[in-house]
Image: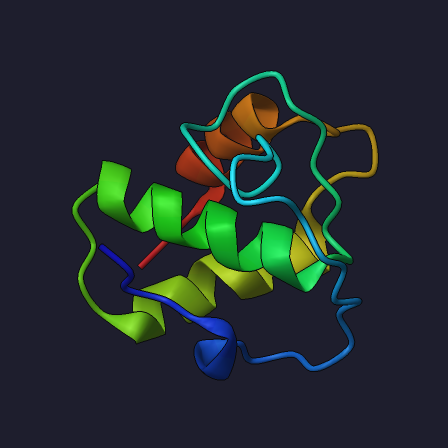
Amino acid sequence: MILFSRRNLHYSDYKWSVYPHNDPHVNGKPDGTSFNREEGNEMVYLVNRLMILWDYRFSNTGNKIEKLIHDKLPADILVQEEVQKWVKSNLKF
């Protein structure tokens, strides 16, 4: 299920690389795979996975997650699981 897509992104400064369909950067559950906040496909994937995981259904919530990661994610957080934990503890409504 896709709740958040490229057209929902607030920022437009992402790079757009091509990934194989089963690449863990853009498929599966957030895990120990590296995360690149400058890569649009990775951002869309992670925002979507977190929205599904936490049962958020509105794209504006996805935008809050995107903005938080884009603007405030510490530089030393480099893997999907760490991003997930950080977002969960820093997302405020």
